[in-house]
Image (cartoon, rainbow, N blue to C red; front, side, top):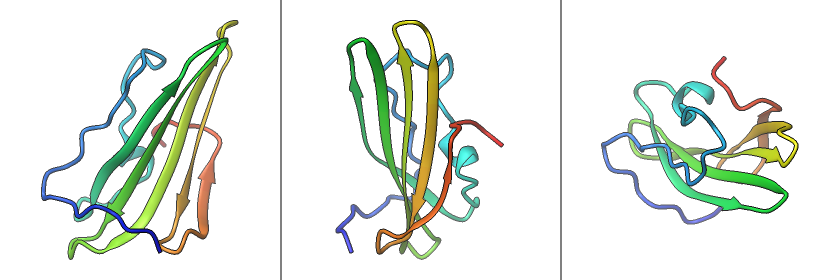
Length: 106
């Protein structure tokens, strides 16, 4: 199991270091995080070039501050304007629980 930061009581602010998306994704809505849980932004990074990609990582904690899931998501855009995105949900041990080929609110 990986070591993770301890969440504070405030909700995480989604991090975007690129203008790829018109609106910053609402990760809590995308991942369907219950109101009693906390989603913490762990990392974001951008790779530029002919294809620009933004990657995000988040951790989900329950009301007792126990890590229950980790998320990895991405959004990419080619020089021709083609876009793709997706996300994956992992349990505390790193086992894949869910994935979606679209990074958007359901």
